[in-house]
Amino acid sequence: MSQPPSWRDDDAASAAATGTALSTDSTRRIANALVYYGVAGLVLAAIGLVILLVAAWRLNGVTDRVEVVADRMLATLDRTADLLDAAVVTVDDVASTLDAADPMLDRVAGALTTTVASLRGLQESAAAVSILGAQPLGGLANRFGQVADSLDGLDVELATFADDLASDAGSLRLNGESLAALAGELHRLHNELSDGLIADTFGAMRFLFVALLAFLIAVAALPATAALWIGRRMRSELAGASPVAP
Image (cartoon, rainbow, N blue to C red; front, side, top):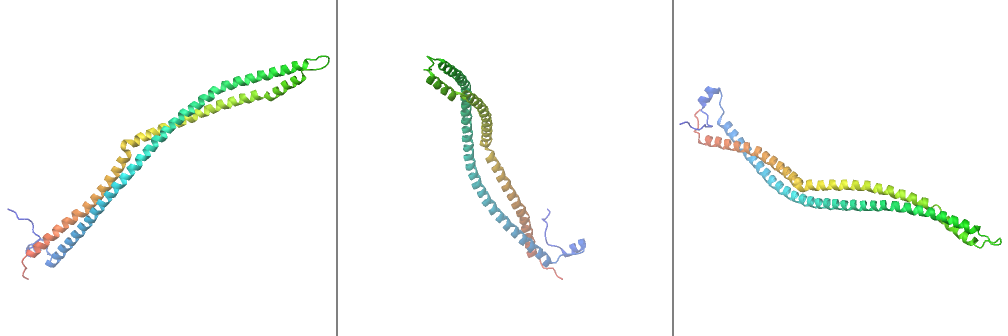
């Protein structure tokens, strides 16, 4: 049955095989260096483990706070989108009202044109009445003329105002379409974020950070453990070795 390898060197065999041999003091110094390296590596690994636990705890706290803020942001997005939808409905109603007012104003402008023409005719008729060279209806004719003068040009202004209302109604509809598009975009963004995108993103970042720290701890701990084991093995074998006669 084969025996496990030993760190004790047989001087004659080592000299025959390699032509040189390490002294006991040199081997002991190497063993001590390995032990010190292993202890230092394990201490660093323990410190890294503490940092890992603290970082994981802090990341959990930050993730919880971000999720709370994300919920508030989602609620704000939802309310904003609903307000935009309501604004779109209001804009459509106002545009419809303006469209309805346009033909009404056109009819009022036409009626004013007819009224002014009628008043001018009444003015001329009243002024034409003459009895024995006197004009008993002259004052009434002047009244008709004054009313006609006050209404003159109002029909043109109403027609221009009706055209402006029609233009404003078109602009309102364009703005309503833009608001509707923005509301739809906010609804889509709300749906995407509410599916857990933020939580998944922070979960992936947390996993990556913890995995990286765990890997670095393993890189520091495994060689340190191996070095500590080898150093202690060498020490034990050197302690159990019988002194070699010069």
